[in-house]
Length: 186
Image 1 (cartoon, rainbow, N blue to C red):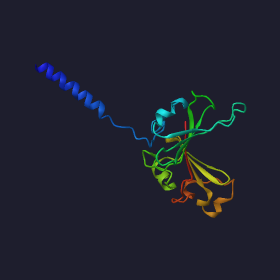
Image 2: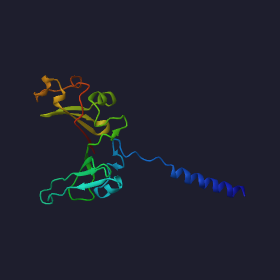
Image 3: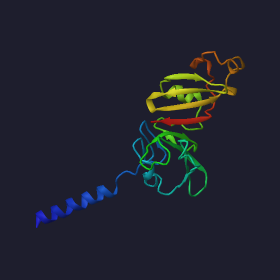
Image 4: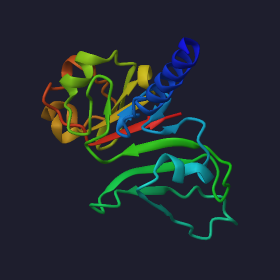
């Protein structure tokens, strides 16, 4: 009698532990994942990573020219765009995602960096791997999470906005400079 009661109790405990498994945060960004999407998720499996969201695949006749077409993810309840995914190959359901443009501010890193963060948030939480100067913006690279943050040059002091050859250092970027784009690369 004691053995059967112990067995029933053990089975009930196992079932309870399986049902109380921690649900993965769909807005959590890591080095090799964003929510349920991982660096090895294939295009054909996007419905599993975004089960309640709308997935829009723009196919513009690229089968002849080989252009990559982005895949847009929309929140099914609000209709707002969440992400733009770029696959490694166009029109290939087995292709994986190579880059993700994060649009929705609910997506955050483990150190709470979002699209609403500032340069101070980035430099206080991550080691900056590099700063690149473009025509209208600068790109802050953070290898720790395979991310890049684009800041509009309008956020910089006037003497840094117009010289493309000027090497911009982290100390020259104002702490309150806002992020324009947030990208992950795999």
